[in-house]
Each structure stands twice: as structure tokens, then as C-alpha cells.
Image (tube, rainbow, N blue to C red; front, side, top):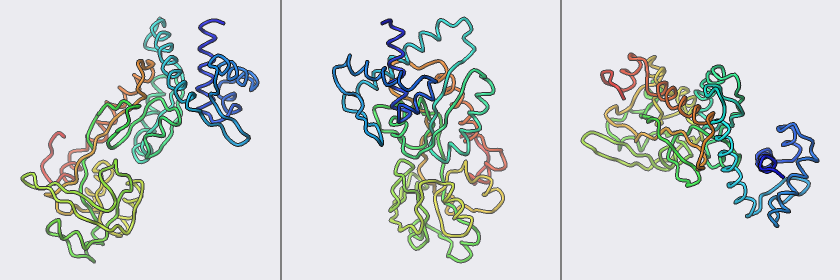
Length: 322
């Protein structure tokens, strides 16, 4: 058996895990199902151990299978990088991209950027997945992703590409019914809408603000609505349900039009990082490197490059570069 045959075995194993079943992997790789079953048996015979536990409903990786999958992905990435180097025309990208993003960023920005990237590189295909749990990128075998918030997983490499600025807002209708706060402590009596994901800036039972002269204040809150995503919280804000901390990229048009207004403009919520992430492997295929560079340039410009009038009104000051 040649080295190329070995790579096919590794590719088959990785695809079976990522697809969930042998039959699904067979459709992705366009190979007969018995061929993939034979590849898996060959790998397990060579390893001298079971890599996948199989029953009628699902497949599960064994502990040895988890270790082998990580090594297999690393070897496949190295092989692909070597192939890239041999291509005469390095400007032509080929292959399949499996991309991941946190839900709100993915649906609002990443899909559009992926479409533009595919138009520029017709030899590529892409698959998109959205979740607010970055660990799913590992579990589901995605190549790369774009996430908001802190990443604390040694299996992932995060490259910070920007900053998401946040502020406290409510609708004019809500503020007509509730007393407009004059200081952070006044917020304790207000109806709060909060995020459930701690990597997005805090737990739903408290919130922190940064004020003048480096002042910091953390308030206990009892939200009337908790959500995994800011898009749904924005809808509730527009209905006049309460107050919430929102990212400026999502609401700058609402602030400019007056649909939402800032509360305590001299106080802000802590900013959170915007990062591109990929699996911690020694080599990245050219298509992944190119996509991450593309996103780093264009998504940062979209999220931080607000039009001057909207930027001025959103930030409550003269337009500056952030």
C-alpha cells in the first residue's frame, strides 16, 4: 500500500467522523459505502484497536479514535499544503471549506463574505455552520471560523482581528414608561434583557460598566428575557420590553434613526474580541489561510468601519478611528 493509499484511509476516517455515518460520508466522497467500511476496518486492524463504536443509531469515537482523528487531520493538512506548493499556479484555490461562526455574526456578515470569496475563487466550495459554542467547531470538524468573545481551548488557535464595542440602549417607548437612569445604580430597577453566553461579556445575573476616569461598576440584574443571540434581543428592545447591552455593529442604524437611544452614554460595556479561529495543527491548507486573511480584512472593516454619521451618533462623539 502506497503513501497515497494511506492518505485516502485517513481522509475516509475523518469524513466518516465529520459526516456522522458511513453512508453520509460515502455521499460526500462519492465512494461506495462498502469501500468506506473496508477502509475503516483496515485502519482499525493496523491500529490494533477500535476507533469507532458503531450501533444502529449512531457512531462514537473511542478514546483512541479521538487521538487518531487529531493526528489524521494534522497529516491531511500537511499533505494538502505539500500539494499546494507543487501547483504551478498558486493563485488558484481548490477544494472544500467547512466554516463556522457564532450565530449573529455568521448570519449577518459571514455568509455575505463567503459568497464574495467563492465568487473570487470558483474552484472552491463551502459549507457553513453556526453555533454559539465554539467547541462545536472541533466536534464537527470545521476548518476555520469567526467568533465573538474569549476563546479558552488549547485545541483552537485564535487570531484577534478586531474589537466589538458595546453600549447600553433602550427604545424611546420604554423610556417614556420608565424613569431614564442618571447613574448606573438606577439600572437595578429596570427590566433587563441579557445574553446567556458568558463568552459574550458576562453572566445573565450581572452586568459590568466602564465609566469616566476608569470607574467600574458591576450590577446584579434579574432579566425578564435571556437569549443566546443579540439579534433576538434587538427585536425585543425595539418592542419596548426593556434595556440591554448591544454591540454597535448591530444597532448603529437604530441609533441613527432614533429607534433605539443610548442610556448613560458616558458609561460603556467592556468590549469583546473578534477573532478568526482554526484547529491547532502545524500546517494550514492555502485555501484556509487565504480565507482567514480575507475575513480579517473585510469583516473588521464592516464591523468597525461605520459610516461617519452613524458612527458619530452611535458613539456619542465626533467621528474617530476605532
